[in-house]
Structures are given as C-alpha cells and as structure tokens.
Length: 126
Image (cartoon, rainbow, N blue to C red):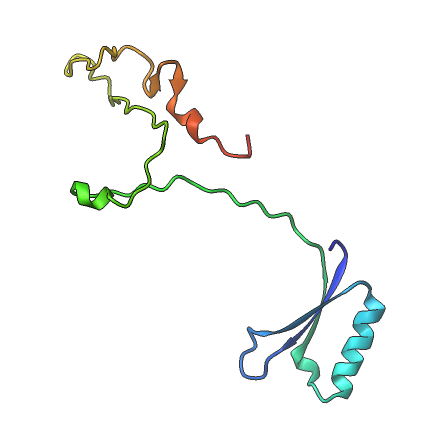
C-alpha cells in the first residue's frame, strides 16, 4: 500500500471517528472529495492524506505472575523445558552464603551449564 492516498470523512458528533477510503492516486481522491462536497458534506469534515504504510513488528515479552500459595499457580501454563533457577548474589557477598547444588558462587552470575540466562530472552532486533 505504498504511496496510497487516504480520504477520511469525520463524523459530525465525534471528530475522532470517521469513514476512511484508500485510493491509488490523487486524481481519484480529488474526484471523491468533489463528490462528497456536492453531496452536502462540509469541507471541514473531509481530510485527505498522502500516506505510506509502515512496517509493524509484534514482539511478545515474558510475563511473570506472582502468587502467595500453590492455588495461585493452578491455571498457569508449565513449560516443558524450564531452566533451573540460578542463585544470584549482589555486592560481592560470596563468603556469606554456602554454595547449593554443587554450583560455585565464583562462577559467572546468571550462568548455568554454560547457558547465560539473558540469552534465553533475545529480541528480534539482535
């Protein structure tokens, strides 16, 4: 729809609403506008735009829901291959907490089995 002419006729009661027509060239748009004016539509209600269609991309982001007990999660979908939780430490407090599940806190944070947690959420822009 590149290079399309758009003719919009606004509603009398609500100028945020109206009827839209897509036309191939400006001569067709001019004839349509002339016909609308001749049929009694006020000139102020007619809008004509030279438009170019823009590309649109839809990206789905992770959704997190928090609950207080197991019944809150009863309807939540469960992934087949869920990554295991990773212990994360902030502020260099390695000596205060013992390592669990054989994972050393000297490893790079947010990495388990060689997979970085953030790599699981790459966007389409990369």
